[in-house]
Length: 501
Image (cartoon, rainbow, N blue to C red):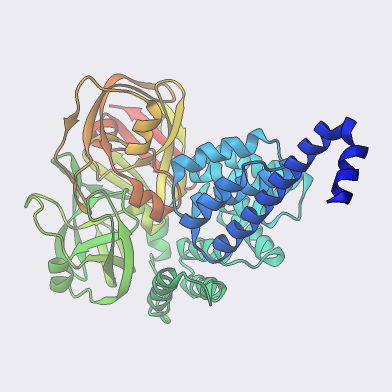
């Protein structure tokens, strides 16, 4: 007690500053403890619990601690696909003006997750210009280049990333690019490295689905996946179609049996109903994870392989096929169950709605200049940028199998519009009825020079599909948009060309 009294007496004149300093030190010490707890929770993949710990760690934190707390919170939000909250946290992290390249690369990862692909790529390049050793920026740039069709260049960056930091998620991206290039053996190798990186973690379900994917890829053995003969690759295939209920339908053959197929660029691969798969002899090999619009959200479906797919003069061998088993019940009987996407075959396509012709080719034939050209990213699905109400920028899936123009619930929330009355809709998707669907009038939507003013858009719950894809889906453009144009989806040039009809 005497010593404490002496100290107080000797420092009386400076008491206020010292007490404030002591309080600040206590706050930062408390923040440090919370940060350490949050890091432990994050490292144990307990991301929901880590959120609160990182948020609490911000209280009384020094600037360096605030950066750590914000970055940890942002990474946790991205892991659980809470993209709306993640966007707010990314803006906060950016406001702290971080110098560390890893913080900047994380900010770019967040931009990517919001569907702002061009902005993300720019930040990745800025980081690498200052810190070429940044593995996160290398990975981000590689992923972005691949989405622009520069697959070989993207792989170079991705391999450079794993050489610096062999983390599992980098290998997963490498596997995805190899699969798109139909190099299934190399894709399986990369996914095995991804699984090894998850060993001993709590991510049992991710490991299970990854191993299932590896089994499927290995099942091809010596078969060449998605094989098109050299003559077929050099041919421009023109195929008539009919339009039913705003869907493009072609007549094709799967394993020699004739069936109707919807041309669906909103699907990652050919899709067959359970009944059709059994009839044409497509047997399940393994299971995979699927997600779509509807109350079911994510669900496990079977994955098989069609020996042949023939549509007009186009013949493809060893084609992956998603089998809708178990099937959903209670959906309208008019729903089309079988579909294919030319883009999933690595082919570009033209949908000529005026002349009811589908053109499929590796390299599209030259034609007259398009009225509108939109930069297009292909990351599992084809995406273009749209602007809502003059300022909100989102990525939209180009979906020839869809019927309307729709936006996601989180996009609707970002617009902050309060409709005069709530107009619920009965909407069904690939995962059943969407109980959250409603109509939102008064939206202004633009794609370059294309403008929709005072438009009524369908609002859908796209959280689960976004989580599966790894980025926020802003919306979907279907026949209501595409039907007025000759639509060219050019994978080689990464562009969507629209010519009015």
